Image (cartoon, rainbow, N blue to C red; front, side, top):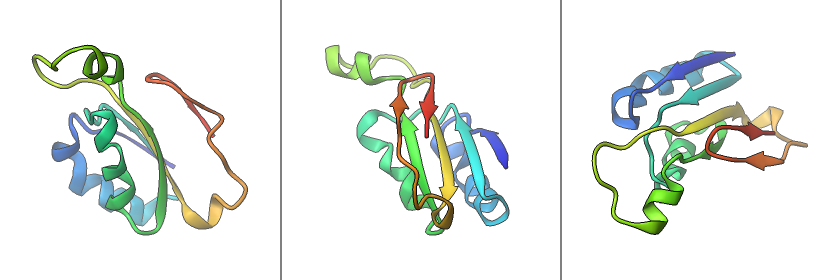
Length: 97
């Protein structure tokens, strides 16, 4: 298992890819992705499936995003471990698989 505070997807993208090579489960914080971009976590690593949530859902739905992006959590789990897994709860602060 590993955990990574990405400080933005672009900042931590390469290191996250390397972590996936060495860990079965990777927990991610501060990916700063908007809801429609969360699939980028899934396309980052062929051997893992991602479960993620954006902290900017309410802001993006109600108005234009101003300032820098913020928040976001996720987990990447090796595909062979996810056979009987499903996401039970997904909020901007918690994901239960």
